[in-house]
Amino acid sequence: MTGYAQKIYEIVNNSRNHMRAEQVFHELKKSCPRVVLATVYNNLNKLCDAGLIRRIATDGEPDRYDRISKHDHLVCKRCGKLADICFDDLTAHLQKQMDGALLSYDLRVYYLCPQCRAQESGASKTPGDKI
Ligand SMILES: [Zn+2]
Ligand SMILES: [Zn+2]
View: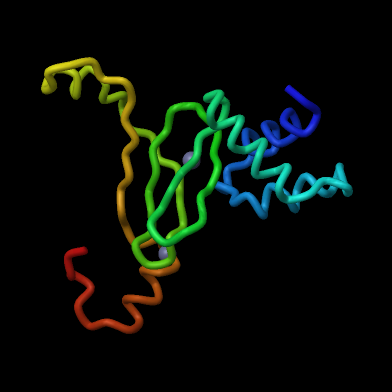
């Protein structure tokens, strides 16, 4: 790993904020003021290809980057914010129902984050609405 890749890996791996490339860039600049955004993109792609970090694509949002350790995500339907959530490992359960080898799964649970819920219940008269 080059110096930049190593640093980028550490930034992503230590963050719980699901950073976008620009945020990683901003963070890296603190220790490497001469780095350019293209370098950050390149290294993020390489780290993803190497399976050292993962990319999270959300509809209509820039890709975010996250540590690889197994966890799943809550996605706010309203503001797109991501939060980590841990389920019991479903691998065995899923494997039983399929006719093939399970490689991996990536769960997305959509919800309203506490901030959006607070705004919504202030504005709407039907808090029981299904999403
Ligand atoms: Zn929200
Ligand atoms: Zn995460």
